[in-house]
Image (cartoon, rainbow, N blue to C red):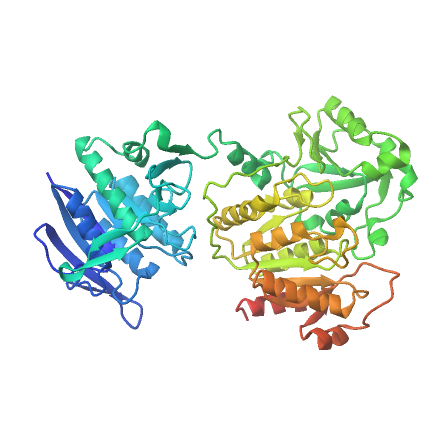
Length: 591
């Protein structure tokens, strides 16, 4: 019995004996698919793919599907129709796709057909990664055998089989002399010609197995031996950490019915107090130490920008035996420890544990209490993609700033509320540990007492992977926000150098940015920050937002209009969320 191999490419120069049939697919003016029985190759690419496999294998037939003929770029819409055509009409065992795209607008639809071909019909798809280093699609799909090349694989090693990576086969780079159109020869070096090489090897091993191989791992293992195997994140440690960074880490018991109290009433808690409606738990009371001077004060009056009527209570008055609360949210205790010469974290931890209460700690800790939840410490990241970056199709809106303590996280929450009001599905990555309690997809604490300490050269890859995970939930938009100042205001101390902000910028690559500024910021500094953002990440600054944080510094400008004239950007007051929202939606193409 001969195996049928489908080649989805540029066609073929003539009908050889073992070509069963073929089609070409193109789009009409109304974007409906046109299927034709003519599949002649005009550029030679598909012809070369055919010969590489045909010259290496016996007892095979081919079915040709032509989806491009003037360039080597793959139209993902045509690829979708080609794969669906195979599923509906072509009995086969292998599909060869020696092309792909870095960004795919119909990725979900293509993925559905790929899954059906593999899981329902046990068809193996082998695809080349593109040559520019991107994590292209469909080669990166988990039910596709992806073939890539690297200069770090020396010629004598030929290739490596990679486990737990989108890349299944990592080959050495090599130049090939290819059979081209009408018997001519062509010399080329590209992944698209390596993929059929390895496809031929896999076809041969499949035939030798008498068709007993039924999954990708077993098939790829046929060309694997001990010295050419790479297993990325073999113990699955990164996958475990990634889950702890997502909202999935929270126990299912924690929800809107969970009754929580908060201690102490510090900066990071203030944002929660002003946005209780967005929290995934019910906040009952706020507590602090007597020495704070806040006891008895109304939260709304203390903050000045919300209407929260709750009054701050003294922690010593808390009845731990009461069943009125289920969890204590334990904020950063460094400052109150210094004020009272007391270890408040340990004190609260011991009391909560003794009374069987949940603890949500904003500081990272590895204490072994089953009801303790805290951000995980992440000190390393090993990329499973060998440096390839995921291409995020979802629109990304970033909130950046010119200093710390500007209300950047509050602005993100205001935007989250407004977007959700209009029915948008909001994906969000928080850099504050309270992000967990707001139900954000991922929380990457990179601010005060940060728990993420990944080396600079790996941080962008790590953030890119998190952005990809967030996009898999198919949100309408992804919100991100960076800590502190985006650009160093001065260069007098190492702490002012904004390395981590740059890493966050290029790791998340927002499509548009809202820049929070202070009224005391020098105009030249704001202009420099805008220029830096737009140059470093090609991310346009949509507008500037004036921070509401009071300051005794001398003002550099007095009004939104004055600043807007200087920077040629819209400028809004912080509380004018409707204008900020409309400007952002307009930027992304809304009404």
